[in-house]
Structures are given as structure tokens and as C-alpha cells.
Image 1 (cartoon, rainbow, N blue to C red):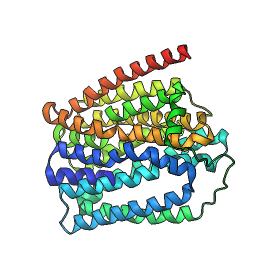
Image 2: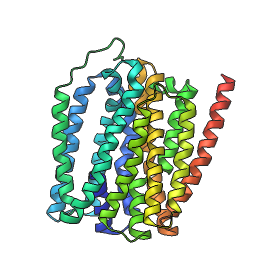
Image 3: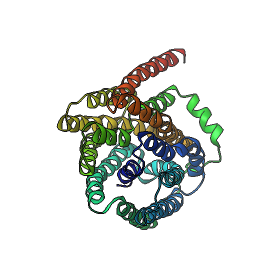
Amino acid sequence: MHRIAQSWLVLQITGDARMLGFVVAAQFAPMLFLAPWAGVLADRYDRRRLLQWTQIGMGLQALALGLLTLSGHASGALVLLFAAILGIVTALDGPARQSIVSDLVPADQVVNAVALNSANFNAARLVGPAVAGLMIAAWGPGWVFLVNAATFAAMYAALTRIRLTRREGARRTGGLRDGLRYVRGRPDLWFVIGTAGAVAMLVFNFPITIALMVTDQFGADARSYGVLASLMAVGSLAAALVAARRGRTDLKLVALAAVAAGGTVITAGVMPSVPTFAAALVACGAAALTMMTAANSYLQTHSDTEHRSRVMALYMAVFFGTTPAGAPLIGLLADDFGARAAMVVPGMVSLVVTAGLVAAYLWARRRA
């Protein structure tokens, strides 16, 4: 709901696709620089307490942005600032949130747990954008931010009820450099992280591309924007439920899902009408979720306990941190060549990069 309202507010205030790209970039840029250090914190300290602090930070950010919007003081610069604040707190939150899954379930259930977590997340994505669209149309985006702020109280309360047993070897003193060395020596890990980052940078800018297709290409309203984002979540939820039945994941699945993500976004970009675009978004959601779940569960199940948070932090830094590079480029593409080009061109480049990473991995494996 927050991201839908944020994107809509930027377009409402500025009407500038490039500004929307910069706001999305500001939200994800901190992940690139802070997440690796946050992974060190999550390996050394209590992940539950770290998550409690980040819930407070994200809740206060949403509350402040909501009050500014309702009072009429929101501006493009302020939305940019609050997106950056949200990005900083999210960067600190991410590694602990991802790696705590392995603290909560046995090792042989991690793949299933990651998939169920994704299903839960995408069930919220299914409802959230549609509700956000209705709320924006009825009362404006400010109330969406306030509702979001209230939800962090529930998350904080849930975290107070979780009790984690400190597992043997789960907290070590190694730093960021040790984590980088570990990933560099594992071709399978850097292949997954690199592939996920490339696809994220080029394909996963859906808050921008859907908004641009709705406003520029189809001339639709906020309700349509929310419904289309929800339909994408339908595909994601279906893929998550399928993934939850898997007992394991492998590199082949990661590579195939990356190809599917690039192919489906190209397809969505050439759809001639809202109904066909909506159908393509369902496929986009399924491919994107399969890619994310496969990468996440592979890294969690194929990295050792000592380095898991740092591996997940590097994954998140690359996966979410590359968005700042992709978002402004997509905004520029849309301004110069239209909303369709902002989907088709990055999708084609994504397929080429994925093929190159597969070739690099196979070469490294032969040399090993």
C-alpha cells in the first residue's frame, strides 16, 4: 500500500517519470551500501531485537509522511527524502529478516518456509494495492501512509512474542571482508547473487512501469493502478504456493526463472489493451516470485551457518541495491521512447545478461 501511494503521490505532485525513478532509486540505494554491513550485525547480534528497532523506524517514517501529505506540505523533494529514510531502515532490516527464517525452522524445512513466507507476503500484495487504489481515489494517499504506520505496531508486538534459541555457530565475529571472500570462492553463490541483481535492476521496477503504462499508455486511474498491481500479486501468490511444495531448489531453476522474468516483462510491454496487459502481469508476478524464492532458498540452504546473514546481506544489496541504477534509466526510456520501451528494452537486456552469467558460471565450474 505504501509503495503504491508513494508512486501515485510523486506523479500527482510532479507529473515527472524521471522524478518517480529517482524516488524509487532513493528508496533502494541504501540497500546497496548498507546491507552488507547490516549482514555483519545480523550475524553478530540478536536478530529479533534488530527487527524490533527497524519496525519502529519504518513506522515513524510512514507516520511523518502521512501527516505531511494530509497537511498539504508534501513535495517531490520531501517524498524523495522520506523514500531515502525508508531505504536506510529497510537496508538494516533486510538481512536479519531473511536470515531469521533459518533460526525458526529446521534446515530441511527452509525451502518450504521461504516459500510460505513469500506466499504470505504476496497475499498481502494481492490485497494491498487494490485497497490502496480505492483509498487514494476516496481520501488521497495520505491516509494510506497512516494505515501503514499503524501496521508496524502489530509487527512489533509479534516480535516481542518470539523467543530464539542461540544456535551453535550462529553468531561469529567475522566481518564483511570474510563474507566477501566466502562468496567469491563459491561460483554457485555469486552466480545466484549476480543473476538476481541483473534481473532486479532491469526487470523488477514494476512500481514505475505499471504506473507509467496505466497513466501514459492506457489513460486509466488510481483504481486501475491498484487492481493491476494486485493481479500481478495473483501470479506471485500462485507461484509461491507451488514453490512451498518443493523440498529443494537448484541453479537450473534460478536460471530458468530469470529467463522467464525477462520474457514475461517483454510480453507485458507489447500488450495492446488493459485486459491483455493484466493477463501478462499475472505471468510477470509468477516468474518474478519464482526467481526470488529460488534465489533466496538456494542461498540459505547452500551457505554455512557462520556466513548466512552476510551472504543474504550481499544478495539483498545486489538484488535491491541495483534498482537505483535501473529506475532512473527506465524513467529516461519512458520519457524518450514511451512506457512500452521502458518494459521491452530492459527485458531484452536482462535475457542477454542472464545468458552471459550462465556462461561465466559454467566456465568457472570447469576451472575449479
